[in-house]
Image (cartoon, rainbow, N blue to C red; front, side, top):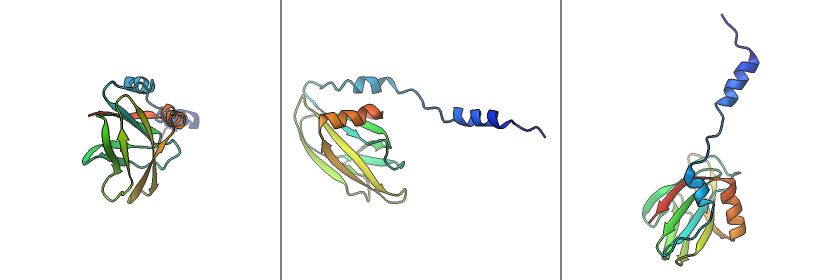
Length: 143
């Protein structure tokens, strides 16, 4: 029986943990540019969050999910919109948005993989951009 040296095994293990490069839309989204005629909402989840998936609904339509250290960029027509957690997750936020404006919503989670809950809070642009810059895009939603 051949023994694999510990160093080789360690290197193979660490290589399996290498982070993938961010997709091209991540760099574009981090320019924080408004869209004429639409509102832009960044739904950002800080990197020190629990690791489970948190599905998100816009109005009555599932739009994706956030994970620890990710964000969604959502381009919407101006007006009233509600973001909320999915299924048993009762967290939500209502936003009255205006065309050409950018909004930053921090998405926090709690609970465990079996029962997760969310809280959503509007944050100032400096903090919102900091969370987005530290994360990676999980989705670009255009409505």
